[in-house]
Image 1 (tube, rainbow, N blue to C red):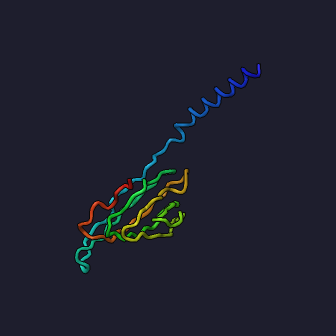
Image 2: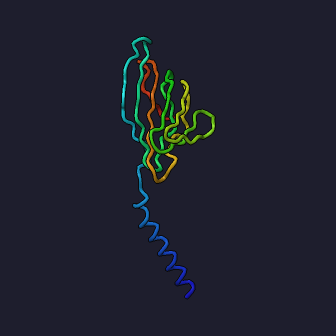
Image 3: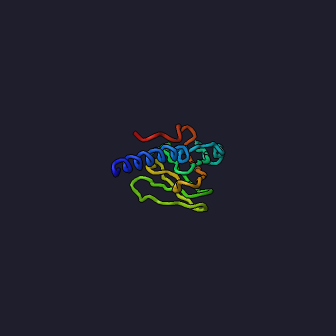
Length: 139
């Protein structure tokens, strides 16, 4: 009888996990939407480019590099984002806070800090006008 009850309990647990999987399913990647792009008239060869990065709950960007010339200012619009640039610490940046990335930086962690609340940030690049692409996945 004990073996039968153990088997039933294991079966119920497996069914519960299968039933819960669709409820926990979410997008695991960020969405990047262009927001602004303009050559800087008094700084020849430089442009200002802005994008909105939206992270569904639990979503993350793969580790990446940005254009070699890009200085980046990121401002968290809503939610909270975990970020690690180069070998620095992983930081949690909340709505209303900001961080920056120097040219040539590796962005090794960039993800929503929450598994239940979406996060959005504005990323502003000051970049050489002909330096493309803006983002390249790390190998």
